[in-house]
Length: 461
Image (cartoon, helix red, strand yellow):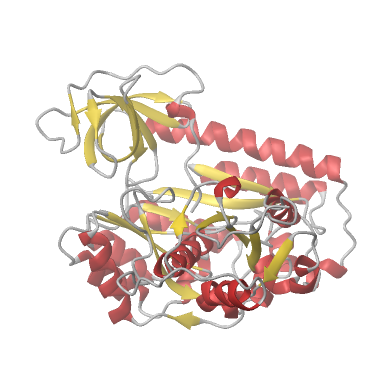
């Protein structure tokens, strides 16, 4: 058997929300500071970290699959489980074959040190020399980082105390941790200096951040920052101040992801949600009145135990009336330890699947209608992808539409004005407005085949 070499490379697999994405980048920076090289694939890694998710049964299964993917015999990588599933099922994951360490949320900040101690004290292998010039606050990395994104995620808050009856997250991330505003401004300035023009404000319960409206307006004053986007925010947390900040600050993207979960009041009460369909409708109407270009996206659950056939039909009709730009659909799965887990899971799996399919079809139909409503407008597109072989670039508009266009060249991270010419599924095909683009040249009208970039779903909030 070949002698084990000292670990030199690290990879991370991230499941779940944007908070996990942010924290994965922090973990990678810890390893960079220890001299490790970040690689994209677990097959190339000496240390493989899975930042797990436990929000649904499917997410838990995917987390376990990702952990199994990293096991390659006795001299395989050091496999580390962290994140929400590792927090609530720490012992179970630790005893999975091939898993070396299972570390909960309270241990994330020192995860690299824990791995280093294992390498030194258990494997008796030398550690790489530390690199003190790399700080853990430059969380998005630099050019060449395989995890680099064109939009920077900024975690402003952590934890939730609401305890909706179906949700495990308040048990894996309890409390309400708020990052100091000064720290957030400093980090945003560093991100802008690194070339990012859009930041996405995120948290486990984003709306629990006190003075979120003031934070939005303060960040908007930073030179070089062109876009501020809110990730998912509880409908009850959307205050008049937040709406006014979005109205008064052109840099705030006109896009609100408001998780509805269900459009039936009986089910909402059983879920322990804090709003009714009437209050949700009033919020949506207020947003559309104050922000005419706003897109409203949502999450909806299929098959909650209290969801009778009548309740589902009520929910479906309500979603239809709301005219969402997109619905993220998922099936209910009981989470051990939650209030709903004690309820009889009365909706059979085939019924859950059928309801999910109906909601997914509805989402596609409404997405197409929203895209069609944007034709003829000039949309500022943050370029995320460019294929030099086809000459096709694509990115996101401020109101979260996937827009594709042709160009001889297009720089990732640039903001390009594109005239929306034609709806393409749930996205837009368009052409660059000449003499205004900072990132595209020699532009022609883009006609994509079905299934191309115009139909690609946006990455989740």
